[in-house]
Image (cartoon, rainbow, N blue to C red):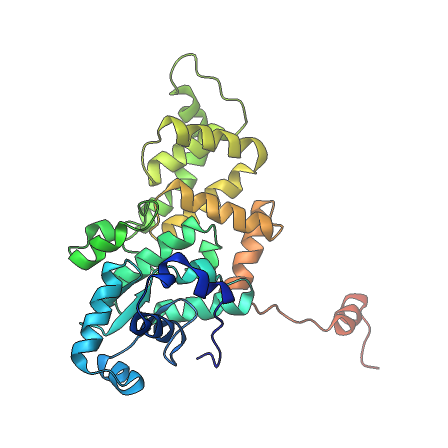
Length: 303
């Protein structure tokens, strides 16, 4: 729990804020600075706590929560007593490793998974490090939700959540990589007549993507072709596997993973595998006593 929350001085000059009543301004500030707030902007806030901390009665609390939902600034779910501030991530980006880990930990504790899905979409829009923020988190497609309030939330966001399907990825699907690689000559021979493969391995990437994600359209085909020209094809396949691991079957998610790996300096499949091994071990690397290794290699005895 943070001890401080920063509010930009331009908050008071914002057109939306200028039109608020004094009561609404106070309540808006309260929602962004109360002691229950989190780094991700999704947190539990029982109405009883709001009453106690603000001095408002239940009727006023209900009225203000409804009003700010109508303003498309928040969503409040009575069932879990959780609130989501919609524009929070836009102004509070996790810009360091500790912040990313904090957000990841908070998201795992969110009860309403539709909130997590909406947060995922906002992170995509902001081009954040999706792989690290949502590590170990299954994303549910909000299109599957029948919650009317969540449907209302889709309107102020700029683009629909792409991918992130509910069904689990089977080991059989993941293992298709070996099958496709071993048969890549056959895959190439089945390509439509006249199509030119500009880069070695492009057809393998294309076949693996279509086998595990979905048939590609022309825009996705061009993106895969472009990636295959500048990125090791084995790395692209590993990125597709990583997307499958988190049930995010869309090319944008794969692109975010590749961007993240590039920022980390991971250029080859071996680089990625080493990084994933260290990550899966909690960031701990094995420590060696190099002097002792030297003694053993040279056959030096204790005497």
